[in-house]
View (cartoon, rainbow, N blue to C red):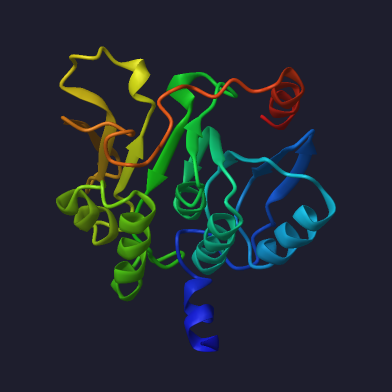
Amino acid sequence: MKRLRAAVLAVLGVAPAAHAMDFRQVGDTLVLSGPVAGDDLVRLRNHIAAFRVKLVLLHDSPGGDLWTGYRIGNWIRDEGLPTAVSGKCESACGLIFLSGARRSFSDGKPPAQTMVGLHGAHTVGTNRPLTEFSPRMAYMIRTMTGRKYPDDLLKRTVYPHNAEDIVYAFHPGRYAPDAAGRGIVECLKQAHASFTCTMLNGLDALGIGVITEPEVLQLPESVKELLGRLS
């Protein structure tokens, strides 16, 4: 177990010594922002023991410690807490978001800046794919989305050709109801260091289970004021 954790600490592009997530409580909303780090689960448990939390809002997080992301996600699901996203929520943050009993995009940031990103595990620095973690990641994504996440896309998400390949989900309300593509974007790393991003026809965040609520969550002004200070 120790060896597994040591390996997981080196995935998803953030080193184990990264700063912990920032916890901010506004009313009954807990705002989590910044990179996911090794002691965040203990901090989260202690926080929720001291405060009344009805919503976990993930704001501008690049991800981080995959092992901690798994454990935070499982704990949030066991507690039956809903999650929402404001800004960009990638990799380990995306897995935490998927663990919400109900999941929403929020109006904390403009729709074009609000997204959930999922990608495979890889080492820091060398970006070597760590496919030994892919089955567990696939199981978590499949389970948390109610098996709605398409199998072919799931395989490309957790077994990418390039470690930096990523799948983004935007709110489908940004797009016309009859549009072929409605917010699921696959970005593939190219040899010349840029990305080629393609909107995937016929898929949207609600249909593949990334979100459970079609409406954009309207946040209290007090929460928006905090997000403005964090941005």
